[in-house]
Length: 200
Image (tube, rainbow, N blue to C red; front, side, top):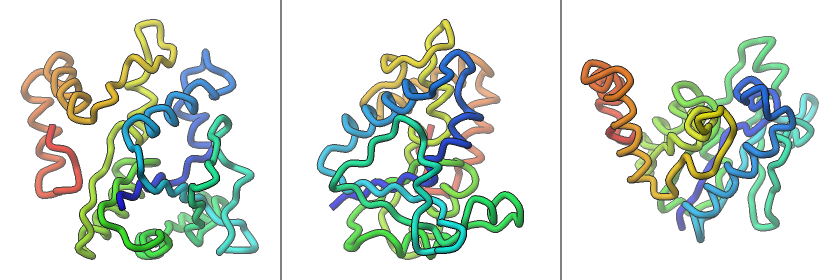
C-alpha cells in the first residue's frame, strides 16, 4: 500500500507561510487537503505531529494547522520531540523514529510537509537508506504556499495541477521563465544524486 507521510502540519508553520490576505488560513488548508485527496487516492495518510511536552509518544494536536480535518482512517503520529524542544533547544526529530512510527508494510512512501530541505529531506534520505521506495512531493511542502497563489496573491486550487507530472513540467517552465537556464541548472544540481527528489 502507498503511504503518504505529512510532516508537522502545524499552525505556527502555516502562519509564517500564508499570504496576509487569508487571515484564517483555512482556504490554504482546504486546497492542500483537496490536492492530497485528488492526487493520492487509496493511500494511507499519516499526519506526523510534534509530541506533547510531557508525553513524547502522544501527538500535540493543539497545534494542528487550522482547517485540516483528520480522517477516521488517517494515522496520527508523534515524532518524539516537542515543538518547544525543537525551537528552544534546536532538537530535531530523529528520521529513524519518524519512519519507524509509520504503519507497516510500506510499499511506497511519499513525503510532504515542512520543511523541504530540512526534516522532509532527512526523512526521505533515511527511508531511501532503508530500501524503501520513497519520493518527496514538492507540492505538499512549503512550496505549496507559493505555487497555490493566483495573480492577485490569493490561494486558488487552479494553480497546482492534480497530476504530479504536470506540476513538475510547470515548475521547469517557471524556473526557465524566471531565472533562465542557469537557475534551472542550479535547481537540478541541488537535486542530483537524490533519487527521492523530482528531476525538474
